[in-house]
Length: 131
Image 1 (spheres, rainbow, N blue to C red):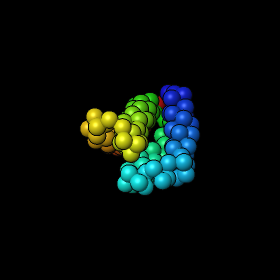
Image 2: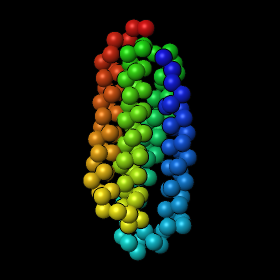
Image 3: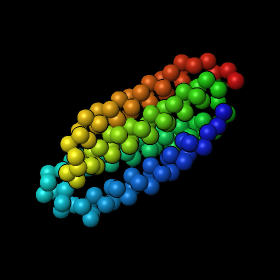
């Protein structure tokens, strides 16, 4: 079972993560410092890029002809991590730029999506590794 989603997601998340990291470090540096939001931006970039690497690893792993049940669980992990980046990091980026306050409650939902992705990885480890 192979899916193009993990590799596509890893590429897009990596591209945007590096771009937003550079944007925050250079173009937005003074703005973020003045608002006291540099830490929030850096946290967003950190989780964004860390989970991008996890999605990329999952893409590589799932392309190795693994058992169907485990592969489905790893694919689920990539969906969760992608949602986590969008919700967790995205809300932190927005909050750092003084976006609407309703973004605040979205951040922990993204964190739960990250946790769900890691739970999917654990479940893949428990899956029978038969074709």
